[in-house]
Image 1 (tube, rainbow, N blue to C red):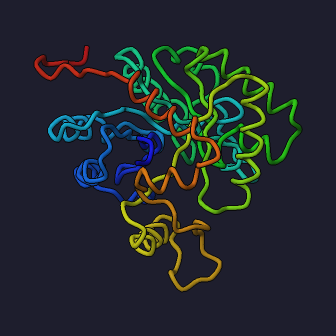
Image 2: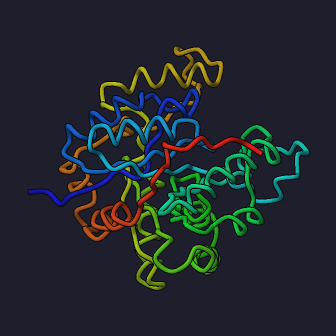
Amino acid sequence: MPPDFVHVHVHSEYSLLDGAIKVEKLISRTKELGMKAVALTDHGNMFGAVRFYRAARRHGVKPILGMEAYVTRGSRADKVKKKGELSQINHLILLAYNNDGYKNLMKLSSIGYLEGFYYKPRIDMEVLEQHCNGLIALTSCLRGDIPQTILHSGYEETKSKAERLNELFGSGNFYLELQDHGIEDEIKAKTGMIQLSRDTGIPLIATNDVHYLHKEDTEAHEVLLCLQTGSDFEDPRRFRFKTSELYLKSKEEMAEVFSDVPEALENTLVVAERCNVELDENTFHLPN
């Protein structure tokens, strides 16, 4: 029997022109795979949160409400066009473990659109420090700050950044995220993360960067990316992911990929157990 596993990095159709999973189908497939919980972490927004929560509860799957935030390296107020603007934005997975965390996710998403929007709904470290209560953070994909620092800067700088985030969110609320979709840079980042965990005690967590339900959906997802980028499918230079592994993998598949770090699989269960948001659907919540 493979160890239990929970997907905590998942993009739905609400990651606009990027995720290719309908919320109801996500829940059905999660249940079919025998998983008791699943997270929703759409890019920069909470558009699908309530629909996801209701669908999960209806089918007896525990919903974990989250978001993959866009964190600018500078200030969210800085909107002067720079060369390589999108390279100035880091990804960070945020999961609400209580209702205060859910409120902070909504606040951060709103700030991203109302104050920080420039190409993407961005937040910065200033607002993250103000609204980090009730949140568990994961270092995200290769576009995360920690993986990028591992790949392009020295170990001491990586360690310093990781310790700062661990201090910000609190011990036990910050995880070094491991991904392996067969991409060379992910292997380098994974090796660095494992060493970093040994040196700092910051725990590891295994994820798949889920963008579609089944492996055979890869080509359909590439068509979606063409719509997003205004590219021709036949153009060999078009933007594309370098893998066909971004689907909702089974426990067996995840156990095989991360057989060398079983604790990273087990920590998905720890996080799922801790995330307990309860939405009050019996009261009208009217704006002031």
